[in-house]
Amino acid sequence: MATAARNKKSARRRQLEAAINYPIDWLEERSGLVGALKYFLFRKVPGDAGWWHTLGSATLTAFLVQALTGVILAMYYKPDPQSAYQSIQHITNDLTLGWLVRGMHKWGASVFIILMFFHMARVFLFGAYKYPRELNWIIGVTLLAVGMLEGFTGYLLPWDQTAYWATVVGINLNGTAPFLGPFLADFLRGGSEIGGDTLARFYSMHMLLIPGLIFALIGLHLYLVIRLGVSSPPWSDEAAGSDYDDEPAANGRSGLTQPAARSGFRRNGGDEV
Amino acid sequence: MTEPQHGDRPHSPGPSLLPIGFAAGIACILVGLIINPKVIVPIGAVIAIVCGFLWARDATKEFRGEPVAPIEPERGEARESTDAPAIPADQGEAAMPQPETGERFPRSRFLEGATLGLGGVIGGLVTVPAVGFMIVPAFRGQGYPKVDLGPLENFTEGKWFVTKFFMNPESGEVSHRTAYIRNNGLLNGKPSFTIISNRCAHLGCPAQPNGPVQDNQTKEVDGKKGQHITMIPMIPAGGYGCPCHGGQYDTEGNRVSGPPVRALDRYEFEVVDGHLILGEPYSVSHVKGEGKNALIHKYKLAGPGQHVHGVEQLLYPLQPPH
Image 1: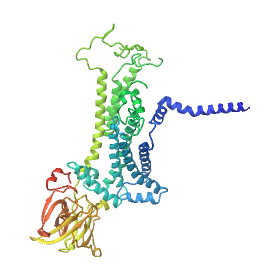
Image 2: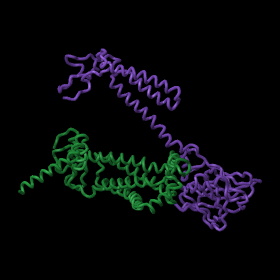
Image 3: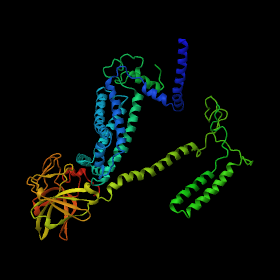
Image 4: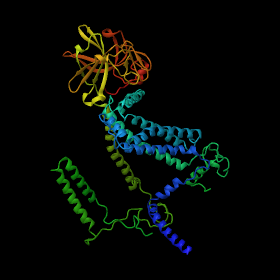
């Protein structure tokens, strides 16, 4: 009796599993996306990778929060000198949960920048920028610069006195760059004086141009992380040169972990380990 | 191997220019709709109909039982599908002769070049105007309108006024500007004014008078086209100071201390029908003397923080049009 019940249950379970798996298999067969996702999520990382290694994904999360809350704020914000300030007041004071989403975007901006610096410090102090990851360091530094630009263009949008004068100062700072500075300042302002065009221009840069750039750079950044693998901490026993004597080429490269080296070899057509 | 492979059999019907002619006809119609519907659209329609008819006739030859000329398979494409590695074309039994000189530009190379070239042209056609539209308007049609600041009598001789006005009244509050104005009396029979811009020569914050501002004696003057002038008497005994980074200036706008790189900017002025008319702003390295006898070292308007004199001016050889 019990066996029959179990059999019946397992048959139902099999049916259920088949029903769940069918669309996943369908997708996998046609796109390979499921396999790609599994490869991304279940790739090997060094055994002694720890909490310090989560700063990168924390930064990514902070950016995604900015992207999401920004998209929603854009549904209510009006980038026009006559109504920008009022629309922000409306978002903050009148709309349901507007205060929360605006607060997330405002404070999240600082979180994003701070996490970028923490992540950068971790990579620097762990020596994780060394061969073969120099290019990813360069992309990361570009991301930092572009992220700051995102902060700069976003700061004008509340269109209050702080926003206005901070942007005046920021643009004029750019204007003091030698040779092309004056032209850069005029480009940023959209003219020789700050006006309605400046606000619309900053809005467009803040929500379209720069986020697009950040998404693209993050894509590249992640691609290189996956391709090269995660580096061990400097105190790691698994650091290159310690116990993998059968891979001479990978030895003597500090910061290059064995899993990363192995996957690198595999992809380059080298020997399987 | 069940799926048909490219090159298994020659295309039927063979390649023809008629579909391209048909497409050109359609394109002609679309362009004509914009440019000249009466003349160009019929021309496009004729081309499209003729080419379309010939194309359809060509394509249906087989079904209508007309003989179809067999088409030579393109070289290299109709190779037997086997698992054996391909024999290089110039070796083995069926060796092809080396192509003659002058024939070494294969179709694939041409297509590759055409794709890249046409792609580049199309990309350029789209990108160049868009980027131009992003950049150029910021540098064209710039300038400073003349602003009527009201009758001369409002400016009591020898007194300073915080004078607020709209540079472009139609663009509203964002064009609010402030100048510090003193009527210096007559110089050689002509009125003389000191008109100092409040834009700090460090990074552009508003420099404030270091001294009492007599708000209770404020004068309001309405001008044309929504212009509104606010005049507040002041006594800038300690010159001017900028709240942002602490730049300090004397009463004539000379830098005294702090980060500014030159004196405060000034405005040109003229008197028309008894009204004080504000002209273009200009930059000043320093001023010697005071009031109507001041010797102003005048330069073309430069942004805040940019040197207009000394060695450092070499860093800013060009200014965008203002």
